[in-house]
Amino acid sequence: MAGTGTIGAEIWEQAIDRQDARACCLAPFGRADERGRSGPPAAIERGDNRADIDRDTAQLALTDVVAFFLDHRIEAQPLVRLLGELAALSAGSKPSPMLKAATTRHRSPDPPIIQSVKGRLAAIMEFRQKTGSSRRAAREWVARNIPSKTTRRLGSVTPSAVDSWLSKWGGERPATSGDGREGYKHMRAILESRKPTEKQLKLIMATLAESLPAPESK
Image (cartoon, rainbow, N blue to C red; front, side):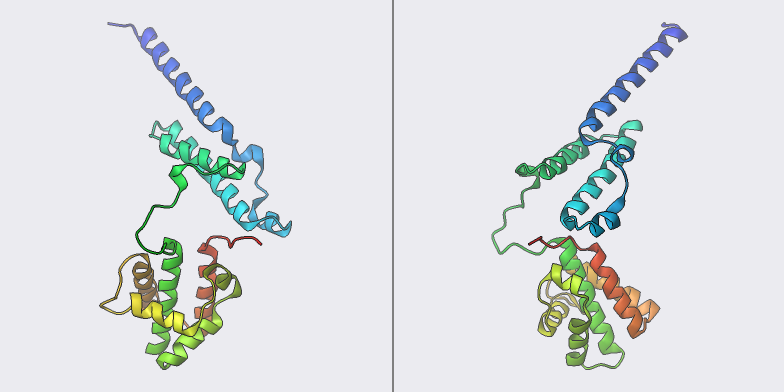
């Protein structure tokens, strides 16, 4: 049986190996404290591309997550590969198949977060109806009060488009399931429990824009 000194040495060597592996995995991506944390607001004020800011911020956050996983001996290789993909995109390299869109037989659907936000806006239209507005007035109110930074990411939002989202994902028997339906259900539950005022509804709609991906720079 090995002595306690030998066992202690083996554990120490394993710890060094893990630390080396951690350093090797994270070295190409840099550490958040070394790269600085001026943050998105400062970068936006400088006029930097918002999509680049989102990607770099995500890379910094993911680097910290990978470091935590490696420190606690949690499998992290898939995240390390994802970090490599983000770094490659930042460097201007073509994405690998890992980041290519899945092939579908139909028109490419909206990203899940876009569908979710549209479902939430449909729930707001429905809530306006339940609080006294006609269907037409409710859809026009939503389309009119969607912040411009939201429309830059969703595209043109017309009253008829908002109405179609409610028809698609709303009610007890939606025409379609998926992320739009889930977004609708979550927002409906919030609205029914909190009964927000018109001013609060506008604030909710403004907040939704923060979850959307940055629009394509021109």
